[in-house]
Length: 149
Image (tube, rainbow, N blue to C red; front, top):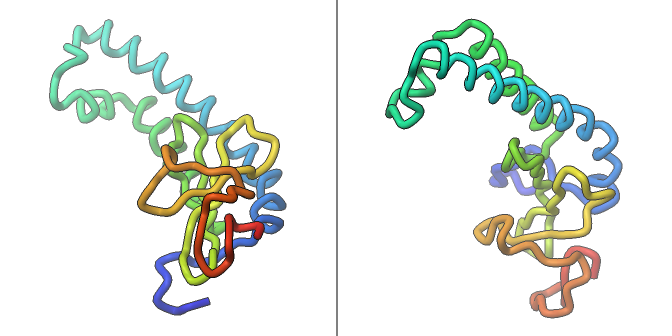
């Protein structure tokens, strides 16, 4: 791999799919922690009569030990996932990107929690909104198509 790449690893589609059974339970754990965090935050907001529109809402909520612990658990789980070389792009949506080499360009293989396998990719600058099927025939470049061509 090019030493100038900002990513610790570049994946093939098979490598990324092979990692899904390992990272999927961590994503599930994150989503459960987020549900608990939302519920606890609502309780604290009501109990302490905090205006949900206050600019320092997160700072105020993190003063609660349970909320602070839940946030730490989310951060730890995200770090655990990213140690595999993939990138958490949207923890609340269960979005993961896997850096992949397409021709001479690094792109992301894209997976969202609930999808059985990786079926999409996007250019880094396009983000989730620019997702394309892996076999997108409209992609041009030295490889003639998406990451599977």
